[in-house]
Length: 244
Image (cartoon, rainbow, N blue to C red; front, side, top):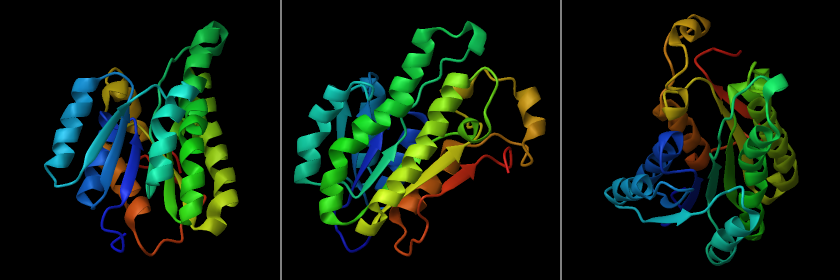
């Protein structure tokens, strides 16, 4: 996006893991960053320092994406005044359990963050982006949203719902030059996957390694920054061949 000297990327859940890698990669590609986080201010400040060291501006915003009013308060006026060029919805939590033992709270918490949060964040920024007739929206789903995973009925449902929401949104806004896509990471080395049984997972991955946050960030950066873009309404798996 070389035509604009100060493009803005809103990275939701950008203080750690995949989100942080995405924010840093986009900063390196020339974006100023709006970085949202829920509670870890130390991690957010560390990410901000890393981004500013690259010569880009970074503004941090603390709110829970599951809280509609908080998301609207944080984003509505800012987006109206200065619409982001790219939005990466990376918020997600897991509360794994077998369905027969899953509590209503475990179901609701995952849905509230992973799926409702998408509405809460995208809704206040969408009209300003439509007004500008340009933009990129990337939703971070999961391989679990494509193929399902035992013990993750809530997580898989939320991530599959995110795919459906993004594809429908792509049909609505494509004519306004807003491109909407989904990335679906597989098993990525983050805090969420530290306790997974690698000896059982590795044989299922043809590349014979777990993914890294940079593997995901590189694809998202391409979708956000590449000028010659005809990818729209698609789900791109980043899983080492775990799901084909």
